[in-house]
Length: 217
Image 1 (spheres, rainbow, N blue to C red):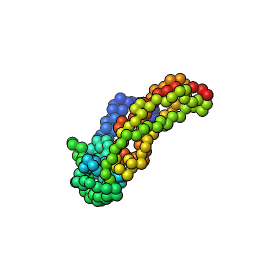
Image 2: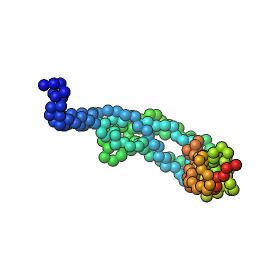
Image 3: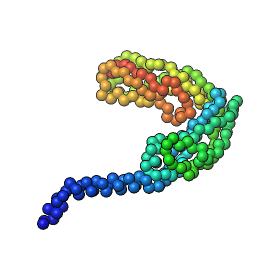
Image 4: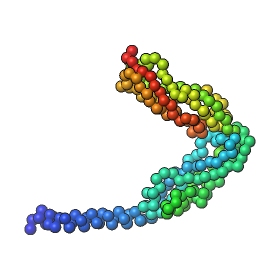
């Protein structure tokens, strides 16, 4: 019998055996214990008059368990912390110790948190302030094109809240750049507000609607 004939002989059975071998290999691999670094989201519960003055440093957890269980961790784990300080001022510092037992693992996921890094972080706190500021739109039309008439921003004002040291310096917020290249005539777009560098500032709403008309200059 030729080599080709030997390979093709009983090929359905051979293909089924190969598929079964792959399934078994995957099943064994998913049960193999392993470790993985997972990001931690810090959920701070503060007094109503207190706000974080800067974003907390990145926190990681070393998690152990079967690969099948680690794949179920679809997002960052959470540490929920209550900070019972009120009447703070600018520059108030709060030291926070973190332990593996503080990490909240989603129910039904069979993994163990071995370690967290760092074990201690420093939070910078401030009094909470809020006010209403104007929205400045950022648009990017094609070269040789410009607005034909006014650009309508709705709403034109948004409420910002956060640490007094930062909120007090804001007189406006901007939108993320709206790419209008290739657009001619009327347009209406929903655009997020630009939060880059303002992780501790809360904006309400988080997006606005821009509408207008583009014409060739």
